Length: 324
Ligand code: UDP
Image (cartoon, rainbow, N blue to C red; front, side, top):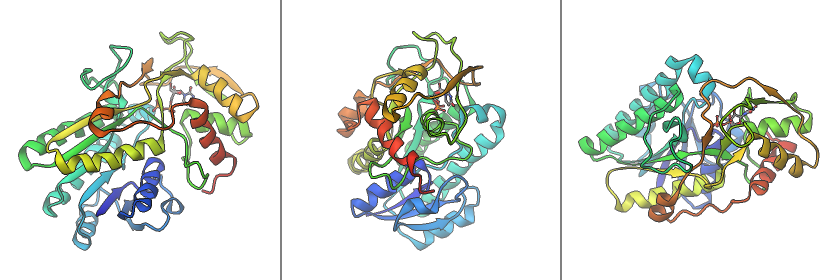
């Protein structure tokens, strides 16, 4: 088994690469290292390249015979996508189209695609399952939903098998502390809280406390990166016996507000997290919590990290001693 991992040097991709190597899968990483880290991919082969350069892509498919592709490359910041929509559509939609064309030319017929809860827009129910309407409210979510539509068309036209995994909030780090989340600038809640706790960053800004939630701060469903990686491995198995384009929501099914996260992180770090209330960030819905019964049923997926303290603890181990 040989797998191409596009974006394998990024936060979620690197945890996937570890898992594949551990499972004895031959793994080639294709990454432009714009946000990824060479140090994060262990012994995997790295091809430095960009999805927006079709010749670089063709080259990698000419040199290797892949059984499947996992595609983690994307611009993924909601607020930034509102400011720079062209960048988001170009990277996330055009880049993916280039990948799909190169896969078709090379006759590689299976793809696991990183999608997002942001495809749903404003939630219309407490828990979001796959029957929920997809009406994204920011260019990031729209770009991911566009790719899902392309995958549905590709299944019909070309027989491409695909699984779109809609992550809710990816969180945590490898429990051994070797790899973890490292963005610059960092925008995500858990790293920002822990860096503030460490004194590596200023007080956390809480983006809005006037949302329609119990304490006014946004509610999210945090799911551990290793559980996400496990779902990808299961998606590969699933495609062996299932044709078509499929989409699954991946979350723990439990929502935590920003204020609840600040308290939980304070307990893990054994010190209060300094914070201040700031204005809302563009493009954030009130509440995003997954119903993942479909993934549990079809993929046999069960998240191992269900305790928020345990998830934050793995992130804290990394943030106390980041290697890159
Ligand atoms: N958030 C915050 N301060 C920060 C970073 C995030 O209040 O410094 C909030 C953000 O508004 C959202 C939640 O924390 O409600 C999770 O945001 P994150 O950027 O981690 O993930 P996203 O939900 O955008 O994928």
